[in-house]
Length: 282
Picture 1 (cartoon, rainbow, N blue to C red):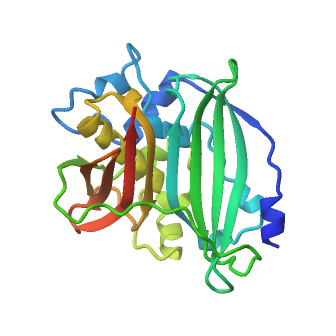
Picture 2: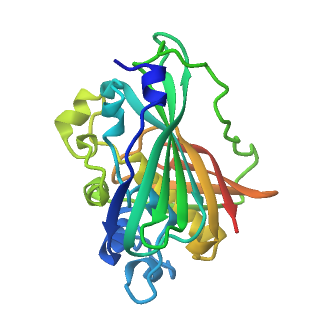
């Protein structure tokens, strides 16, 4: 049975993962790199000569999706709420990764109101031991309120400004975007199985939230970094609505002191699908 004490005290073993340059290029294709005409930077992420890794790939190189089962969360009522990535150095384009996973906190909103679980994954180069990245995921477990934790405060995310965006970029997606992205690790049937999607309340499969996150990351690299992924130090955002393969994604940014604020909109519906985004550059 899910409880605060059992979940927060759970120890998870270190794991090691191996990935190749082909995996890095496949990830880039999965988040839509190369789909847009007039993108001079795409070749850096799709060609083994001078290949670079996109920072959001840190969410899949050590993919692990069994921890919610391990702590006995109600998997039918789990929603990915927020994602944060801090890059301590550039992600190599191939190699062996050692991961350390831990549940950092649980905020209990009360019986019938759910709980927010903060899960942290630290990634290290398995050979040198160098700390590459820290991922922090916020998961809303709607069926596990009343578990015994404190109600908060939950780490805040900054709202985007109310003025018009300083820059925007539209990224197209294909109808098979989810089928391609899932080859990087997240095989959840919600994103490909029509019947499973219907049972979850959707009329068709939705695109992976972390795929949209990757698309936003690359759009920001194009708009704010002149195509140089190495300038990204930290990126975070909140998932706010589903997005469907085949739709167009508009990433909007605002230049502010010390950070770049951003959000993503499903252009055809004018629905905000990623919100409260922040990008910090080196």
